[in-house]
Length: 317
Image (cartoon, rainbow, N blue to C red; front, top):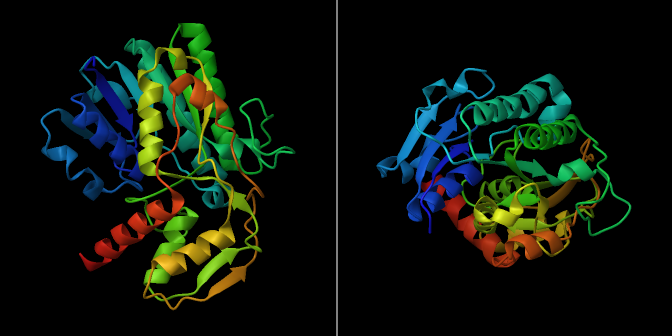
């Protein structure tokens, strides 16, 4: 295996920090950049002990963000973003700056410093409410929120830089990622919210009727797919769905969380539907299978049980 120097934006987030740990385990040198707006230093507790890791606290929305990077970088994993539909509805300009402006700054840094490849974490939100399920990468994009629009704009800049400057670009459209280290707030993913509500003995609040469906993927599988996309020559210029292979209702997730939190006495209640929320989301994985040889390995039940234990231990610490 060829050792590389990788730069990870959003390195203190739950996907970014897990990716950093895996890269370091494989012997690579890693530069992590995060403004710690939502990232957590605790997520990097292992990485900071490694001599091959350097952390830079910097906001990549600022054009000069790359000035502190002296090393030659082979690949950038651009994971930093605001990943909340809800927040994008409340503050679309903030999300545009963080998702589109930051991507432009990352691409400019890559162009100036002759970085070989940039990998961008996009989102299934770009598809909106498609007419056919499962969703292939050829499905027309139809954003239902400013968040989705920001990801489409960033994807287009990725393609434009690739064609204009001969920069290898890879776009991964993540679906619903969950697992240890995911932040818990009103803007978090549904798994994190449900687990923390259950552990606190609070009602589990489902937005809408709960029959909306998603394809959930554990963070370890997500990172494995991301690593493959970074390493595989044939992935250059390709856009791929990265998701679970099962369509699961939000009601089922709520019910499974109640079972996994054995001490939970939580009632499942329904609130208003969330503005900008897509109805059904299940991706077709043929391209990831073909290009990367990727198949998810963590079952939903096992992944939820592990995530519950992680949050339970976090609350005890």
